[in-house]
Amino acid sequence: MDAIDRKILALLQEDATIALNDLAARVNLSKTPCWRRIQKMEDSGVIQRRVALLDPGKVGQALTVFVYLKTSKHNAEWLAEFATSVAKFPEVMEFYRLSGEWDYFIRVAVSDIAAYDHFYKKLVQIADLENVTSSFAMEEIKYTTAVPLAPRCFGVSE
Image (cartoon, rainbow, N blue to C red; front, top):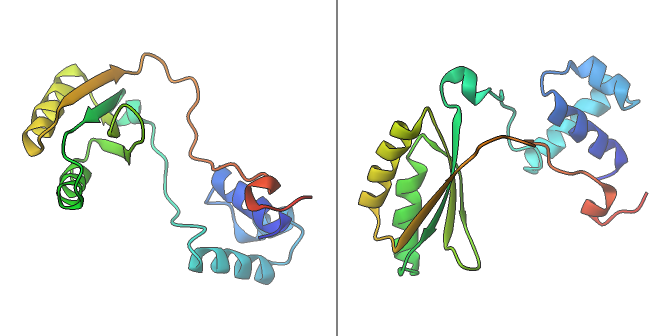
């Protein structure tokens, strides 16, 4: 991965609909070499997919809830079943297993408190949880889907 690849990735993270001609021009390549680089990054999994990012409020999902979970179960079988069950909830935007005080973290998008309460009731029915703590986002200060692409992230110096 070189500086041109990083520039391609940065531009695609800004706007995945950018025309190939425009992208190639902005990274000082002709169309075919630029396309080959993109294909290589897609084939290798660097580019996982290209998606449309929606405004949650404009689609009726304005409430963001951060849910921390603690369980007394830590075996692989329980985790596999729990992960499969949680991943099926459409409200779940992100789901992580953590180190530290809490075992799992879920970011949920819902329309309102009542919708979250409905989600919560379904969540606690699917698993033996020791503790569930929820925090409601009051204000979004920064949100990005762009992954940092500084040269040091790739072990390369410029």
